[in-house]
Image (cartoon, rainbow, N blue to C red):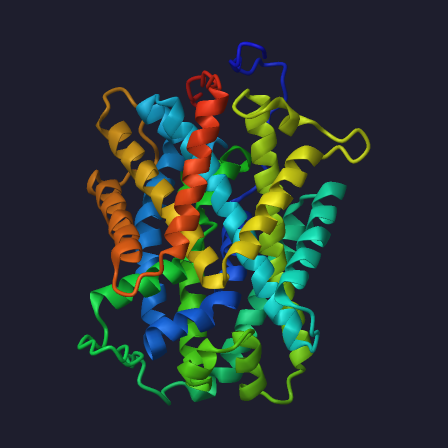
Length: 457
């Protein structure tokens, strides 16, 4: 492929097997969202929102739902495993935008993995391990790199097993704490800062801060689009599965948030290194804390592992298409894995994990994806207004992507310019985007010529 172009698939080449029905797709989506977000950030979110932390999940769900509707529309129109870069390229035909979105989404996976590494370090420390956080982060990422290097067998039953473990932990929290519901004021927020700040209570700025932070918990719904070519009847199954996954995750998050602040005062919750473990420990002292800690570690590690596998394959695929250096496309002769891409990702994740705390890394992840969602919503808006574009079985009004893009921009602005905004997360996200732009300028890749989307059932 010296020319940098991708030739259309011939009939003799195999295609991905369509094995996922509605149930499997919904489980995939729920499993992709559960994990590091709710297990690691409920305490941090409570520190921002107080007992009203459940409202932050409602706000971030509405943002995710708007963009989720756009993704559902896109999946119904263009059921292919290309994701945001493909839609951006189809709409704008601008290689730089597609390149930036592709690596930007990949970078959000890196910051998500870095967040997971620090969350796991916190959980391990609750077990009595006195190692420094940085050392635990290095040890976890080294182990994760080794696992990904050795390879990963993917199957529906394994995905269901992983999701069951993650889900069981949340259901345990709800079950042991439901008796405490109604014991606090669920609209109480932290008092204003002691600098003469007159603002108090539920303000728009506070809701935006909480929503940007908890939005990290919904990351993963956009990945459903990437398995479109493995879904049965994708034009109808994919939109329904995506929306069902969002609704299920939202209900779980709200119930867990209400339970957490009902059992533990939000100030105590915000200081916990393993918030949900402490909730279970107080609500059900007889429940083995070691067991729930193991569930939490598994859930967060699974999220990080999934991001690592997907990120390494994304770099490998972009290299094969001529968008990234050819070395990233090398495959290990024995393990048959993209070992160079895996190593590069490992180094980048380690640098990110050591550069910021959980909240800043989660915020940076959210900011990167919010930026990508602005472009994806804008792309759908352009495609819906362009004559001759195919219509899908699931169509949303033009206003949905327009409002979705606007809301994402408002959330970005609220995080970057809002009251008491910390500049570290925007600097991390901005630095990543600048690095991607410089890489594009230095590399000057030849963008793949995308073939027209085939009309398939």
